[in-house]
Image (cartoon, rainbow, N blue to C red; front, side):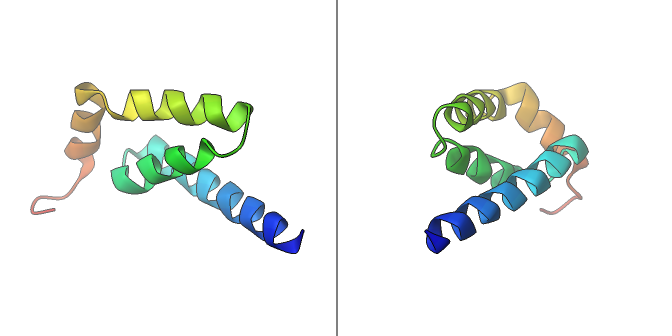
Length: 73
């Protein structure tokens, strides 16, 4: 039970940071990874994760993330 609680809190903290990074349009790979992790939490996490993945794979969204990245990265 303790492992499940620790895993749930870890994913919750990651989701919080992913939300902040989405707002700032930074850390694309981290946001995508958290969207995949969200799919583990049925049913709400699965819906949010799938729609996040669909949105993050759009070329227009990738361009928005690329605009905020410093040159050379």
